[in-house]
Length: 259
Ligand SMILES: Nc1ncnc2c1ncn2[C@@H]1O[C@H](COP(=O)(O)OP(=O)(O)O)[C@@H](O)[C@H]1O
Ligand SMILES: [Mg+2]
Image (cartoon, rainbow, N blue to C red):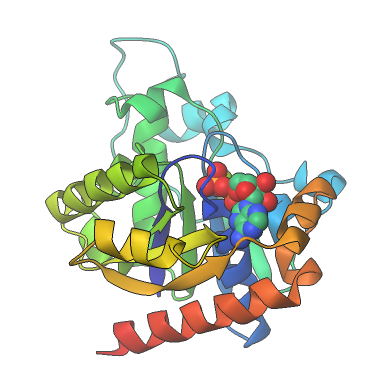
């Protein structure tokens, strides 16, 4: 199963990625969680200590690795580089493991974010293809809205994009943009999760604005989740209520992808 979790900044992509990764791992599935947000913080949402997290080196920032694999150093314009760099050993070499989840961190790259044809992007995109096409495990990509192009060419093999939204117009607009972009990329399914629900009217607000889209479920605004983030801990370990809601979302996802 390969899923990409996307949406506007701050809606809860990383929170949901952490919860789903830990849930699949708790079932005994092999899980690879990919932190593809340049502002990487999936490690803490998985319950990984800052000390351990520092061992997951951000790939986009490994100039030596990029040069070794592509033949060109990042930031040297106009150069020639290999378009099919070797990547299959990267997940094992650069990831760290926690509670059955393997974490890989993409890291910051202005070039990668722009979608340019440059060595770092070629390496990252090929790596993402490898993860999506070849790896036989649950792969969960925690993606910032706007870098969906990382899946260009392989998006058709992603089982689903999950768009996380919160009650508010801006995240609705982002969800619609992602929906059309995903279809343009050939993503098979686009599902919605409504997060941070506080009032009775929030669910209808989201449903009405995203009519026609398929909902996996909703998560309430939960103090324990806020507290988990304050402590840099995982909501999976700190909030039984959020885990229960995430279980329902996962159930809906499993059901929809079975068909
Ligand atoms: N259901 C929730 N209840 C309360 N706070 C939440 C909930 N989901 C996310 N948050 C908080 O919102 C903030 C942003 O969440 P995060 O998962 O980092 O969003 P994103 O990855 O989309 O930027 C964090 O402080 C997180 O703890
Ligand atoms: Mg995030």
